[in-house]
Image (cartoon, rainbow, N blue to C red):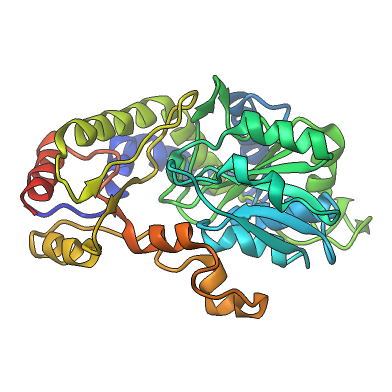
Length: 365
C-alpha cells in the first residue's frame, strides 16, 4: 500500500460538483477582484471565527507583514516569538524592521508561555502566538502577560483553522489573527490566499486601506500601502470549503485518535493536546527519540509511506538570519525538536485502511 504524506485531491473530489459550479459562476460574472464573493467570504469567516472583522489578503505571510505594519511595529522594536516557528513567522517581524526575540517551545510544540516574561524589555512591543501544527498556545497566560506589560498580541493561526482555546476560536483572542489559506491548510484555497481577523474597528479599517495600495477610494491614496487582495475565485471556492470545516476538522480528529490509540513504540513520542484546548491536527507530529528520526524516515519510504519534517532548521540557525548572531546551542529545545519531529500522513479522505497501515509499520520499526 502507498500512503502519501498529504493529499489534496480527495477533498476536491468530495465537493467537486459544488467547486466547479461556483468556479464557472465567478468566471462568467466578469468581476474578479474585491467583489461580492470576497466580501461575503469575509463575513462568513468572521462569523465562523467569532470576530467582528475579517479582511482577505494575498497570503499568510502578507497577513503577518501587514499586521505588524498597521500596529506600528518597526525599527528598534522587539517581538517575542517561539524558537521553533516556521520562518514565515519571523519574516513577518523582520520585514517591518523589528527584531525577533525567541522563546523556547513547551511539551505541546508551541511557545512556553512561562518563559515569555523573562524576555520582555523596554523595546518589546508584541507577542506573536503561533498555533503550530493545529495546537493552541496557552492564550490565557499570554494575554495576562500582554495586558500586564501593555503589549500587542498577534496570533498566527495558519495551521489552526477552527480550533479553540477555552472554547474560543484562535484568531479571536489577540489583537489580530493571521491565517494562511494555502491549499494544504484546513480551509485551503486552490492557490495562495490569506485572511486577517480582528475585533478592533480601527485596525480593520487600516488593513482594508493598506491591502489596496493604501486607498479606500480609487486613486486617492492615504498611505503607502501594498497590493495584497484575496481574489474572487479563491474566495468563492473557500466559501464552499468553509461550509464543511467542522466536519473536515472532526475527520482529522478521528484520524489522530486512531493514531494515538494505535501507535505503541518506545522510540516514538506521540503529540499531546494542551488541557483547555482542542486540535484540528493540521499535522500529526511525532518525536523520534535516540537520533532515529532519519532511519525511521528511510524505513517509511521503503514501505511507501510519506513523511515530512516540520521543520528541519530553526529560524535562528537559518542562513537568512545568520546576521542575528545566534549559534547552535542558543535554543537547545528548538534545536532538539528540529532533530526529532516527523509529520506522518494526515489528510482529509484518508481511509482507515491507510491509517492502520501506517500504524502497523510504525509499530514494527
